[in-house]
Amino acid sequence: MPTASIIAIMKPIVQVSLDLTDIDEALEMAAIAMRAGVDWLEAGTPFIIAEGMHGVRALRSNFPHTPIVADLKTMDGGYLEAQMMAQAGATHVVVMARSHPETIKCVVAAGKDLGLFVMGDNLGCPDMVAGARELEELGCDMVIHHIGFDERRGIAGGGHRMPSPLDQLREVVAAVNVPVQAVGGLSLEQAIQTPSYGAPLVVIGAPLAIDADSFSKGAGNVEEVLRKICEAVHAFGDVEVKGELR
Image (cartoon, rainbow, N blue to C red):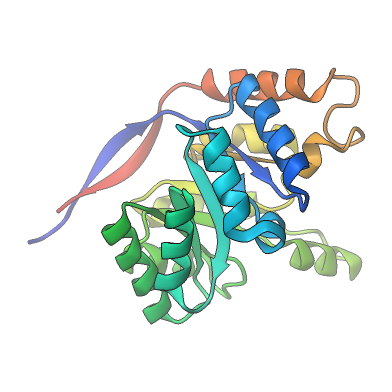
C-alpha cells in the first residue's frame, strides 16, 4: 500500500546520557536526573561496556517505569544484542548506519518482536543526510544525527572549525519521517534549542552534569541545573514531526 506523509505532534523529551563507568555513580546520577524531571535515561556506551546487562538491569530495577536507551552502537549480531538489552529491561536500542544493512534489518526485526524502539545512528556516514534516510528506509523508529567525539577533536586539532550536528540538522529533519535527535559536542544552550530545528529528543550528557566548569558553573547544583533544562525544554511546547501512514 502506498505511504502518505503526515504531520504529527510530539512533546519534547529530555534524555540524560549516563556515560559513566561506575554503576553506583550512574545510579546516583540517574536518581538526580529523575528528580529534576528528565524523561528518559540512557545507558551510555561507556556504561554498557563497563556494566553490560547488569547495568541496564540495575537501571530498570531502580526506575521501573522510565524509558531506558541502551546505546549499544551495534555493528553486527544485531538481533542478539537487541534481545539481550530487551531482556535486561531496555526500551530503546541503537544501531549504526555504517553497519551492514542486514544488521540494521536484524535490529529492526528484534524491535518488532520484542517491543523495542530502534534508534539509528548516522555517526561517520560520508553523507549524513543520506545515512539518516537509509536508516529510516530500513525501519528505524528514530534517527540520531551524531558527530563523534574523536571526529570533532581530530578536525579541530588540525586547525579547522569543529563540526557540529547543528550544521545539517535541518536537512536531516527534512529528509526523514521519524523523530530526530542531535548529538555530539553541543553546548547546553544548543542542546536546549534543538526542538526549534524540529528535533524534539534533547540529550544531556552526564559528564557535563558532573563537570562544574562546563555544566553548572554559576548556576547552582546539578539537580537544579537539570531542572532548569527540563523546564526550558518542556516549555518549548509541541514539535511538529513528520510521520507516516501505511
